View 1: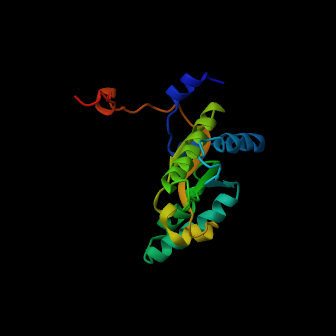
View 2: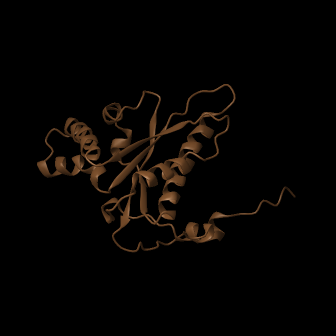
View 3: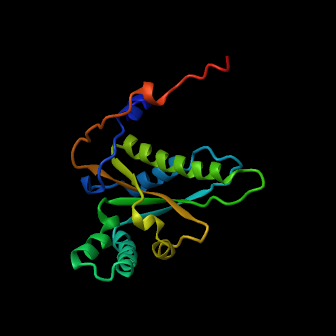
Length: 191
């Protein structure tokens, strides 16, 4: 297992199609979910939950995506429908991070949403620590109410991301990152 700084410095996203089998074992999935649930959570609300898609469940969920796509685009070609049906089958494992942020007397919803984002990022980092590749994406179906209903989300829930996980088909390439001088400042106070 890489040390923490090396882990953080070497994490890269791979396209879901570049994540092949084998995927994580049942014990590794439990580890991933346990780590993803150990994030800052003001008020101990657990304002997120996880939906695991593996095996044939990825295709079953894809049927809901295809159905919603067909409703939006009734003239869609068969190859487009096939592509939509396989959205969650591109990687061996997909875990949806569901934000269930809600009004609270003390904890702002924004903090709850950020906690769901932290859970998603922890899931990505945990996958990397276990030697897998991961990609955190949403795509159109994360915002389509028909798909969300079919996947069992309640009206107040939103998908923070679908985390695609698998064995990298190749070493991921780095991409240009913004120079720190462009994204970091030091507060000097008022003069």
